[in-house]
Length: 210
Image (cartoon, rainbow, N blue to C red; front, side, top):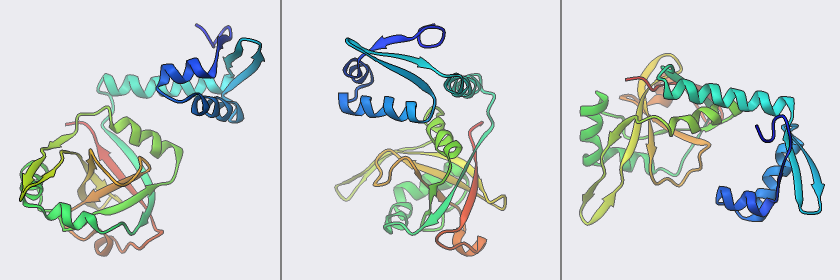
């Protein structure tokens, strides 16, 4: 296998083209992987020789194992951990839209409190689990139009928040936040019920198996 037993010869421009990235971004990715000790690089006249380190092979094996579990249906839940922060206030508006609210009740089994709990993921495993959630179908909340405005579809997963409250993770197809932020809803005010404030760490168990 190229890059494992023997190095592969590649240019950052070719890597960028294969990944849909600019040459500069691809080069930065390689530098970061080398800095983290996951690859070894040797600069050549016509590119660079790249090979996985032992740590890199272990990391690749862990990703393979996780993906294998995903596609074979062996994962029942994924854990997300992060810090609470105050968002832009849009959660209450969107959750309260009748087109969404009606579907939350019928598909999730509860009438959500008008607001979301925003969590900024704080560790590498949580970020990896967030990425894995993209591979699961989840519970689809359909988009709709209201008063000339279009509201997009939302993917949801039932969730247990801090081991005490049953709610759901909502993943809007269009969001102002990056992939390191997740939003939770529940039939109660999560901040009050769990006694949470900005900066507190919260854990959510995301149920991916139907």
